[in-house]
Figure (cartoon, rainbow, N blue to C red):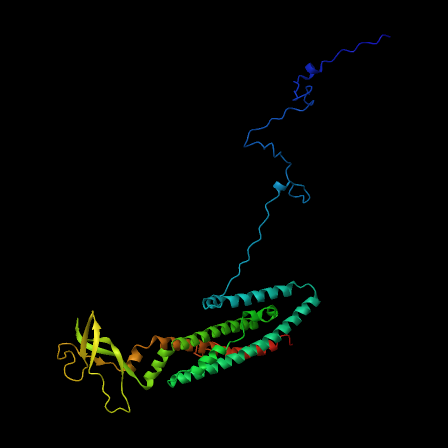
Length: 372
């Protein structure tokens, strides 16, 4: 049987598709049965460099996603530490470093105590805290000894000042005294495992010791730097001098007294000199000229013979009461402030413990750490 000839199939006309020309080589027809994709214009279309991806199934924790589809990582929240009014007040007095150091030490110590995983480790931390308490107790006792020494030196210095004597020996002793208790003493002692009242007392004691050292240095510097002025003030109590005078003149509403510093101070009296007299007149410079004013002794105090007012000397004791020396005021203020730090304040309603009492109580409390 003769083999029938099969008709030739025209694929080009049957598919109805145009051939795609390659840059080189024969033309390649597009794949059969796939429509030509339509690319929408931006901004609604996907960028050719970022092809569309299947949606993410949020309920499936194993769904694979691309890196740029991952949700943004949540940043850790900042930890805010609130500071009490006592801490703020201490910072204003220059004790910020001590308090911050002690507070951080306590916080870190407490966190480490809770972070330890096994009972044996917690036991070691407790033993370290007991050892730290013993060391701190000795350090507090050493500091308390220096505090007592400082208090005695200050007491002796104030006694000499009241007796109109310059405290030369006490000034030298103040330079050699230093209370050996600072914020650094609290590090490495495991105070995070102490009771809160002991931690508070340790911080207060370190802060007070720092303040006492600063106050002691201020007093010593003032006594040394203003020695001539202080000696002159002390001499006023035994051999007073007249430094100020007054004169009477007519004011807007009537006569009044004007203050006038004298060109040279003169002694109030000389016990061994029967012929001692006050100056008869005073030469006072004013406006480029020098005026000679007589000292008042009798008659009309508003007019002298030359028509000028009389000078009336001022009692030096009343002068110090009304216009005290700046040096005396500063010295009294610094002494009073340091006394309060050392001995506390016993004013009803304002009671405050001093370093002397605090040191004794704190040392006893530290000895009881770790005891049942």
